[in-house]
Length: 108
Image (tube, rainbow, N blue to C red):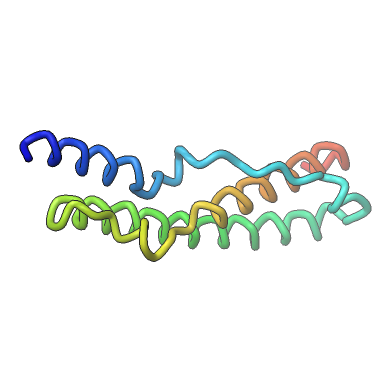
């Protein structure tokens, strides 16, 4: 029985939501933004940055909820309800792609 608790704790901790900073960007081609004006790219970057901020806030809330869940019942809630890691990765990738498109278009 005393060996069971560390195993359950280890499994619970590995299932916890990742912090936004540890989520890698998903590859997005900058070609999607080719032909856009610098002004349009700036608007798109602003929009994606807002979406990324919102997704990161939701993900941080999941991380905090998992910490509380593991502390109280040894089960991270995100293991059952999911998290926003995919959204964070996608928005990070879109942001990088827009920034690449801005450099290619010589936007300042």
